[in-house]
Length: 68
Image 1 (cartoon, rainbow, N blue to C red):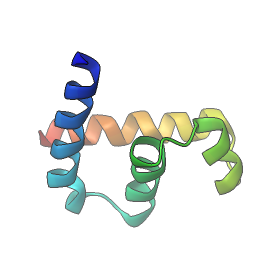
Image 2 (image 1 turned 135 degrees about the vertical axis):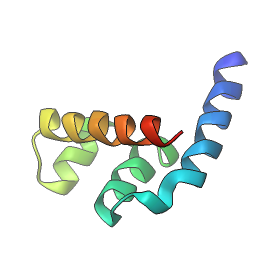
Image 3 (image 1 turned 180 degrees about the vertical axis):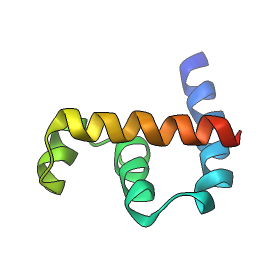
C-alpha cells in the first residue's frame, strides 16, 4: 500500500516536471513508468541495448531529481 502511495506521489511530481524533458526522454519515462513496460521490452522496441536505455533512464531521473 505504501509503495503505491509513493509511486503516485512520484508520478505527480513527474507530471509537473515533464515540460523540461525532450520528447524522447518523455517517451522513455512514459513507457517505463506509466505503461509499465520493462526496460528489456522498451529497449528492443527502440532498437537500443538494454544497458543504454537503463543509462538514459538514470540520467533522466537525475535530471528530474535536480528539478524537484
